Length: 150
Ligand code: SF4
Ligand code: SF4
Image (tube, rainbow, N blue to C red):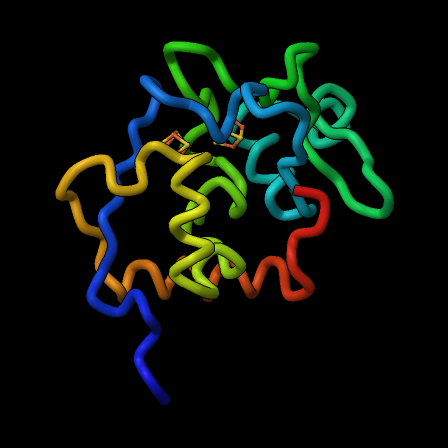
């Protein structure tokens, strides 16, 4: 099997709280998809019963579930200047970004994603091809049919 185009690694460093573009409502409304295990992890992390967690923090979109948004479209768990307040329990979609299957499908898509994520090419920090591939596999496993809606 040929090596993926990113096998030598790519320049990326998440700018974290000083950025927050993928968590804030800067680019409008979006979905942060969560499945049952991810909701359970988040509920446990927050010390809440599952029912209470879903009532407060989850909305249904079609047949799937997403974290709710604040009125300004920020993720409910995003705090400006602080970042993700549930970082250790953040769902797969957040953990694997920007190394999503659809982004890594071609170099052109990666370059396009740089418009949304300032961490791409931020400095000389390199994420290895192996690490990227692990994220792609995880993303594909979690979203085998793609991630329609975002
Ligand atoms: S759960 Fe955390 S990492 Fe994911 S979008 Fe919300 S604030 Fe960002
Ligand atoms: S948009 Fe990119 S650099 Fe900014 S917080 Fe998200 S992953 Fe990090």
